[in-house]
Amino acid sequence: MTTDEINYKIQQIVDNKKNLPGALLPILHDIQHEFGFIPEQAISIVAYSLNQSDAEIFGVISFYAHFRMKQTGRHVIEICRGEACQSMGSGALEAAAQSQLNIEYNQTTKDNNFTLEPVYCLGNCACAPSVKVADKVYGRMNSEKFTKLTDTLATYKINVGELA
Image 1: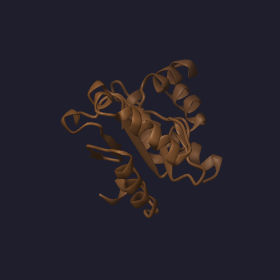
Image 2: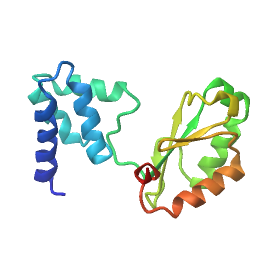
Image 3: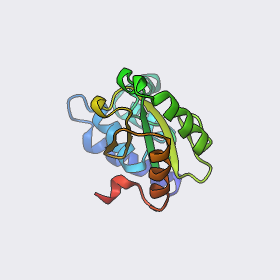
Image 4: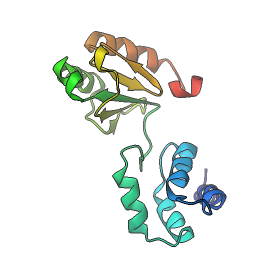
């Protein structure tokens, strides 16, 4: 997509929702859904259309962990860092995952296959430690299961969430 095409698509999304009460969050969600992240130029387009400053839009984007301003890998792997998961070994799982993928949190592998992100509760405490990929939560995760999971995911050419 060219820059002009991206800008046009962003403006279409904004125009479709800008008259809703509290339009900013639905607009940002739609932009991220369309592109997989919020392109930098979206900030100015949204700000201008909603009569807000770039700083206000960026403040909202940076406040919510859900929003991303850079492209992620095909598979976003979230590792739970909540207390239950920590008490059941998520620290060792984190270290194994980072070592296996050769990345830290909030980074993407060189092959653009995986992005690793921390989360602070997946609501699966009884099966801790847990990880989430797309809309699927995997419980009682350990380094061996993690390797099997990433091996399986690596065979997919699209995001697992798109298979549903």
